[in-house]
Length: 236
Image (cartoon, rainbow, N blue to C red; front, top):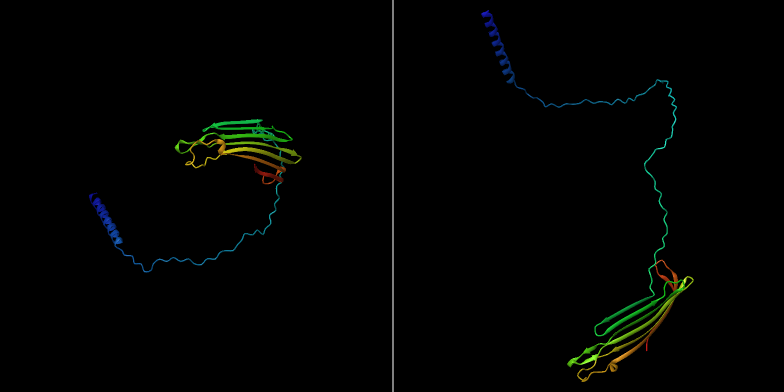
């Protein structure tokens, strides 16, 4: 038995040495490259072949019978009717028969304006305007000498219009009375206070105008004027 075990060990050692020897010899082998690898593909031709069925196969299409039953779709959406548009008459501005303006300033300067107007009418309009503006102060010159330097302006106007079919006839008449005090005097020659009447100059004014135009505006928003004439302001 002992000799048998020794033989087995000897054979195993011999096989192990041969394996190591063969492995070492394989690692020491050399590889020589003569030409680089260049793969090539041979020419190919596409097969032009389409499927073709020469044999006829009998086929009978099936017959279908069906019916459609309409059904109403119940929707939760509710249509609310829209109210028809109504033409609302535009509101008219309130008119007043009269307007009074009063004022008072330095140097005894009163102001008063009064306007009287007719309310809305289908026949026409009519109005009267009164205005007064004056100043009664004095101008201080050298040596505390004071001279009148006031003025007075008073105006009266009467105006209106008359509706004639599709035309409007306008008229206006006015008059005015104004006084101005010219205080441009040589103070070296003035030794006493001057009277107002000696420096006052009065002016009387008058004016009038007539006009006729269409009651309908053109494409630019202006009424067509048929006739318009006015008298220049006359100073008397």
